[in-house]
Length: 251
Image (cartoon, helix red, strand yellow):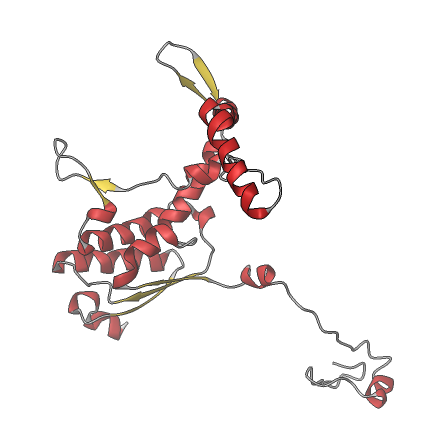
């Protein structure tokens, strides 16, 4: 809007001509190109998850935005940031996470000081490699390639037992049906920690009823409805009547 109250329209794809600049010099109108960083753009985009019947394990364990991956990282961060005490079998109390950090540094030291490594294997490897590269090769053990927090973030494992007396079955060994249910349960569990998810989450599901019994399909429908009430956008394709109803169409 110019000073005379009339609208001023500028084409952002075309630079202003010299005549336009002179005409608009006292209108406080102008523009410049701004290149946003990808992280800045991502902060304003909804978080999107695409779940398919064949990517159950990947979406739980591998994806950085997967529900179990997020819960695992949250657990690791709290483990290393919260101050707490652990009582040992001798009755001593150890402060955490300081004791764990000291133990990790001690582990690094003893690995490098192991006699077989330091006095036998390390010199052997350096001699052999030096003969190939024509110089003095140095071989070291990199014990610090993974931080404690990174290691902890990989330790959240889900297993189930049909009764207290039976041995637990790891998730990766379960059938596709149970894995599908646990993936949705992980999604619901994630909503218990609002700080882990963006306000806008788009969940895309391809035939979530695959491998599931009818009563579990109805459970999925309720779970997805609960997620939608928390502000998530749920979009799914289905061939199951349990996941749709005439009431939804009339709403």
